[in-house]
Figure 1: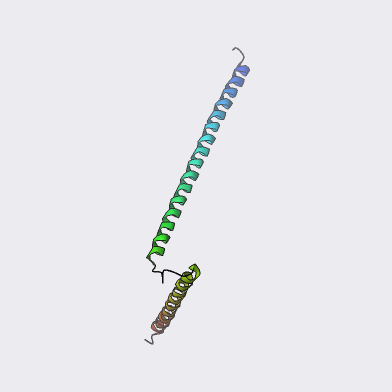
Figure 2: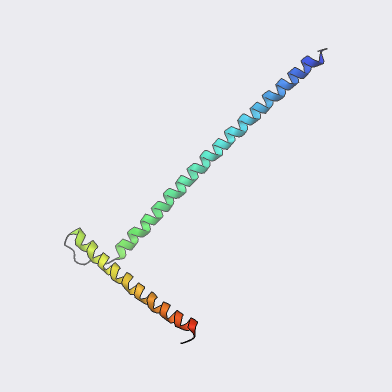
Length: 109
């Protein structure tokens, strides 16, 4: 190796190959980590969905049903009527609290 120009060429080539290998490893590791992250998030979402459905099923089981016979829509409509009544009562309470709060702020209480 008497010619420094040839030596510099091979050194540059070796550096480029080494950098290419390191870049390939880094990209491979990044995609691997991204795949792991995606799989973990999907598993967490699946577990969250199961937990929510379990809670919903428990809450549904805790609601007393009216009568053992009848159509399904009849049961759901009575539950929705009860739910609507509860919502209406809560809205009325909120309105009363707003009036009291307004009176308190104006000092007329």
